[in-house]
Image (cartoon, rainbow, N blue to C red; front, side):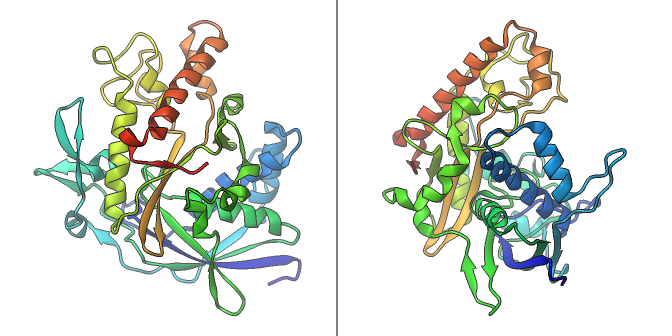
Length: 373
């Protein structure tokens, strides 16, 4: 390794199955998704570290550090990643069927549905009366790899912050914002000793100081609506927009609780009739598309990802789930397609919807969550 480069070693494993793989739909450990995840959290660290950040400056820095193949500008990434081993077992369809997922009641369809199907719709399908894996296989839980990251000198603080955020909130693969592909990341020092990237005290409701390292990456959530991409953690007058589930002894139980929370949170916004709808509905602000409820001007191909990130964490005495809000506005093209008057009206609608979401998540009697302020 050249002297002008630094090398860090991490042990990574999945706490929940990951729908991650190649074009043949079979599970595979691959570097590009890990690099993309590092890039995602690096953007937040870079953006919040600048006094007057701009999209142009962000793109310039991103191309500089992560490479670019744009016309008239080609450069290799200065961040290099590799695994110690590509091989390993996969979770096939038959094994997936043996996992005991809980069922949750969905008020709108008047049925109990598998938590795995509700949170994994797409990679997970419903056949012969049970939830089944659509892909040939998935990456299983607890199958670990050593990830080696090399980067130029002088970036230790940035890499530390990026990996720490990624360790707490990062997931990979299909339906990763719903908790699938939840990553556990630990650093391996030069002596081979393994240490966590964050202290479990960060998940202690009463220990607010343990979350002080998160606060520089958070901004008032309404201010975050000035951008249409995830550029910061959200906070309000009480503190961070971060919630934690009850402790469970199985990761499957955390996904069940996530499904209950998500159903309750979404169905508080009622639809009138089926789609395509002529005007924007509140639930379409949360994420888009919505099954059976398309918006006429957006159609079925428009995309707006959920701003709430769900993550399952393995802790010393079981499993915990966390939910964090990375607030931003509707994507620019979707806003432009609405044509429903001034942008202020959309902004007011977004503020109303997300305020109601926060209130729901804060209501322990409805969500069974605790707020980590």
